[in-house]
Amino acid sequence: MPFKSYLMENKQQFLALLGLIVVMIALSFMSEYFMRPNNLFNIGKQASINLIIGLGMTIVIISGGIDLSVGSLLALTISIMAVLNVVYDVNIVIAGIVAVVATVGAGTINGLIIQYGKVPAFITTLGMMGVARGVVLLISRGNPSMSFPEEFLWIADGLIFGIPVPILLAAVAALFVSLLLKYTRLGRGIYAIGGNEEAARLSGINIAYVRIMAYTLCGLSCALGGIIFAARVGAAPPSAGTGYELNAIAAVIIGGTSLMGGQGKVSGTVIGALLMAVIANGLNIIEVDPYWQSIVIGSIIVVAVMLSNIRK
Image 1 (tube, helix red, strand yellow):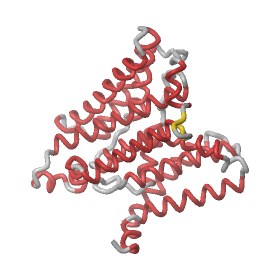
Image 2 (cartoon, one colour; image 1 turned 180 degrees about the horizontal axis):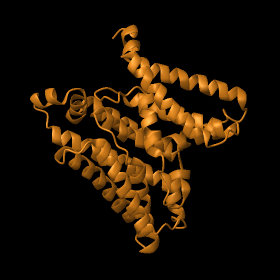
Image 3 (cartoon, one colour; image 1 turned 90 degrees about the horizontal axis):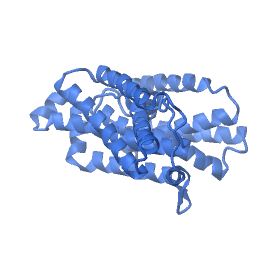
Image 4 (cartoon, rainbow, N blue to C red; image 1 turned 90 degrees about the vertical axis):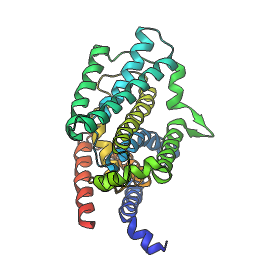
């Protein structure tokens, strides 16, 4: 493919990448601490959770849906794991497996309700957001003091070949989703139903299977993000994941995935997640009031969607 055609096809990703570079250069002049290796690794670890959740959100949005429950599902993973391990003395590995299965199951339920209950994705996942958060408060009793064993914290603090484990996990997850979307029948089906569901059905694509799998994979991404979050914090705060749905959507939209479905790439979500982490880190370094971060993120979403619509 000629470079000019490739550039036009991936214009949004290139603009996001350019924005990331510009922001990093600006912050490097504003603070000498910003470009230090320790801070860059910290940015990578901050971005890893949002990226992993964003990968699930990318799959769902490409399929023509939306998932507002991702933050609550992340909290559900953490709380189930903490209650089993701390209260019932279940081995942390077994507790983690049970928590992952439960969260993936919640994602599958989202897909089933949307597909067979004919309830819009916005309403279904908004309801799941409330249900999952309620379950978190119910089983944890709002107790923020439950902590995880020391060996579990290696997931957040450990290094493999000098690279923090969360960054490696995020990279592997991004590679997996990229290959899935590009080279598998399920991936092609996700793009197809997001682009034109009726045409996909007439082409013989199993709409129900593809849609349910999209939300199931999103649940899996929330579970993995929850495990990393729990290891980073070392505890199970009931408020974990609050606002993460906004961050995930921002990363996906900044990266060029269309809210209308049928279009998007993992590379764009990676750039979007990094840009979000760089902005958050930079605002902290230059001592901007943290409450401004939500204003900045919300503004970025509006501008990104507006630019995407103008480009179309």
